Image 1: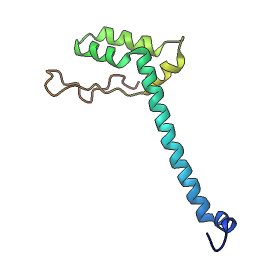
Image 2: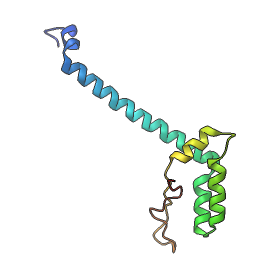
Image 3: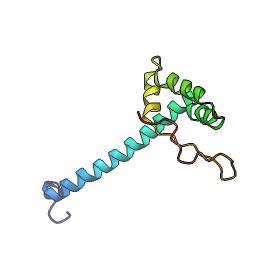
Image 4: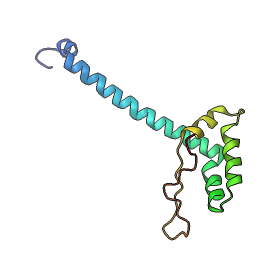
Length: 110
């Protein structure tokens, strides 16, 4: 680059392709960060994960269905509702717990 100049470097197809690949990689990383942030904001807004986990641990499936329907059908705040639908929840439990909810999907896909 120093001997041939910046113009020759930028006109080379391999360098252009390298720039495009690195740009897409950086954009995908930033998008992943932003979506994770939006999902966490939606969960804080509804407190959905904790409420659903408590309903499932107490085996109150009607309460779980009510929570799910309230969040999914919330027309007043569609942005938060969308990210709650898009997220797959996994309940975490300690190994000493008598209930094993590990890998339990709280919002099953329809």
